[in-house]
Image 1 (tube, rainbow, N blue to C red):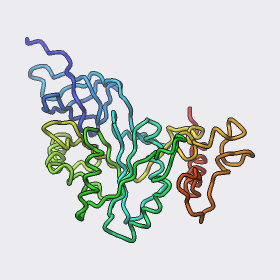
Image 2 (image 1 turned 180 degrees about the horizontal axis):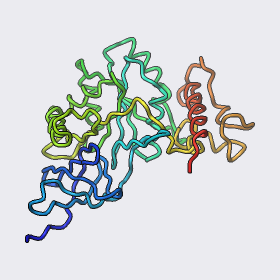
Image 3 (image 1 turned 60 degrees about the horizontal axis):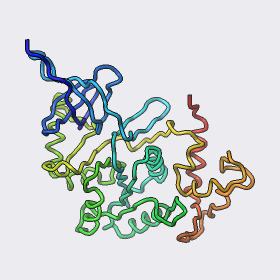
Image 4 (image 1 turned 90 degrees about the vertical axis):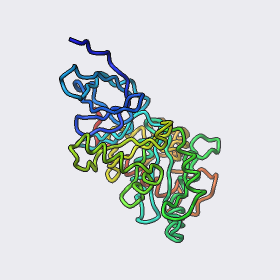
Length: 325
């Protein structure tokens, strides 16, 4: 009987249920299933997998998930949704129309901050002049936010048009993505599918192959998928994942919120009390910096927008009600 070879290294490029599609360094792909709970893998994981013995089918076994740099996920009261692992950045794609949820945007940014993953915000549909101007103004706090006291902007916010000629905007985005692994998130109507198809012309073919492999040909709309922007060189990757509509943060403690919201955190250390919640305490440096709802933002002032503070209050209440065991 021929001996089995030792475990091989691979990259998880898709997953559905308990099955994963693992890519080898030579570019070949094979369906693998985990051996026990400790080998549960997500897209972006580097794994060690074992080929099956001769005559026992084609599916391999994931023996071990290698140590992750990070894991981007959300958690609500019922379940945890893991998006992807080992990311360089998260691209949050929103649009001038339909109107985006600032609360959902803030939640995605906080989840990225918690895993030390660089977030990039892209506002699509710059060709819709008036709606875009209103949306761009709503993003003022994110375009000017500083969290390190050195005046450096904390977030990158890019204008974008995916349906009209805007080569400068697209070139800036492509440069931002080059050589990195990027998870793309976006609500319905933001243009996420258009973005993927624009940057990855072979995306539909890849999706079809993965659907055929993992789900017997049925279209797997809930599958997180890895795409190589440069399939020959394989240095730039986009990961497309559904699940942006609901974004629970129950894996984060209420006391951790200030350090994960840069505009709040830059003032938190100046409060009178070390355990200040920034909700009602006297001598709170955060509350002292909150603007009135109709205030005109002033670049470099370090002030906190009324909407941002309201999001902080709502999240603090939500996370305080959830007990962390």
